[in-house]
Length: 450
Image (cartoon, rainbow, N blue to C red):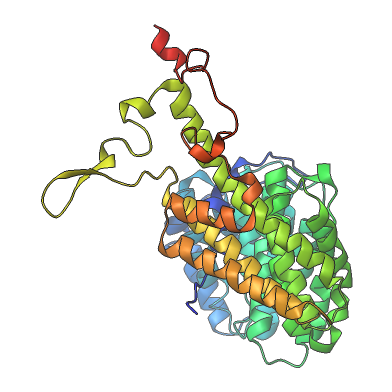
């Protein structure tokens, strides 16, 4: 059996997330007006005498005094949102952490400095005085702050959760906060600490709230993104919580609600199946039969979604007359040459490869989830396992042979009722009925009537 591996976040690329954050509407809270910083670029602050004095004091073990706090809050954190640094926001966050926190030798001073930063960054997330990009960058920095031992700052977890759960905060900022929460879950998964289950349990209520968001609480694209991530994070928490996985019962109920809603996005519903399949393996009682039935229907929906695009393009060719002129389904590339140098017509493909990659992810993901869910059945277990293998084989085929014929073959196998007969397909005619050639309408593009 060949394996196709998909990164969990492959559909959540940096470019996509960046575009998502910038596209969502801005809704702000309040904070005291920010004074204009004296240093208009991070490089100017780094090379200043004030910064050198700050680092010298704190490297020597001095306490975090008021003058140090002023420099951090009035000159350091504003670097996150001033125009001079707008082309290198990620780099600014890294440099700020290095110059302001790496130089602190005393643990008490370090805690005081990070506590001050957490409070101010939480306020900047709700600020009306800075740009939306500045608020996003502030929240990203909040999620990246580390403690003296190099672990993500636990005191930032609660403020991040509050921002995520606050309906008055702009969706883009809430999404940025959720990314910070995801980093904490990832770190907990790799940790061997004794309190990891306790820390994980504190994150669960926030994920539960995201998964139960009302329909009109966020723009659809933002809501789907947040719930998709919450499902992924909940799956990761299952292994961390271990025998306390029942903490995620609320998330399971919300996931089932999303799965049953045919109006929700296909990819989001597929992610619910993934989470539910892992939940079943973790010992959470689930209606496995219902979920498997829904998963099987999602296979058909996934195929119809792509197959419909092929039919739309064929219809477009038909009404424009492009197919008769040899301009459809690939244009000049439709003609090739055989080994003897004779021209031959290549196979016509209407779908770009990217569509097959997504369809492959959908089928392989559903098949793997169905295999896990089938283990919970008392009967029909082998039937679902065999069907999952068949579904997965087509998913692999999409990846290895991204051709329209591969897609059509899958539709014929799993959803034959959706097949659209070709116009010149003899099987589409009724053999028992003769047609009058004089009255049979001819296939003609309206654009040819000119």
